Length: 219
Image (cartoon, rainbow, N blue to C red):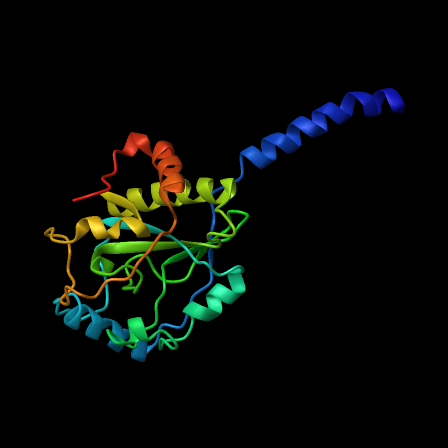
């Protein structure tokens, strides 16, 4: 019995390693509220902040913007994004009462959740919302993003590129580079917020994983 166990143990270990390495890419649905009021506020944002008149609050995705939440847990972050109306942030409510949100949320272990359809409008990056899919990662300055999140972001962006022919991949802190370009659509030139997420280090590692796709990072 001990001899058979000695033979089987390494085989079981190898099978377990293969199972982990061959995990299937998955997105779990965890939708935030998207009702008539959110649609109305999104259409107003598109017109007033981006100068775009649309019948539906939809985007034609050409960009992915990577964020971190600066909120420690997935459920707390979800509770922040879920309400339709934004509260407690006067620097943002001056522009619109539409709540901030993103299309995807990546937990610390790399699990991916979809909060909104890929082509739904979401308020997450000034001047670029009309064309950008937002990916939020649980973490921040006190909780650097993990290797699992790096892997998940790379896989998710590859998936989105196949669906939408994404051209640009940027970190939230890099959005300033688009000011003054043809891609920048913000009607108030003074409406800017200071961002540091997810940082140069994470974006450098992410771009290395995606180097074969030749994404652009500036206009």
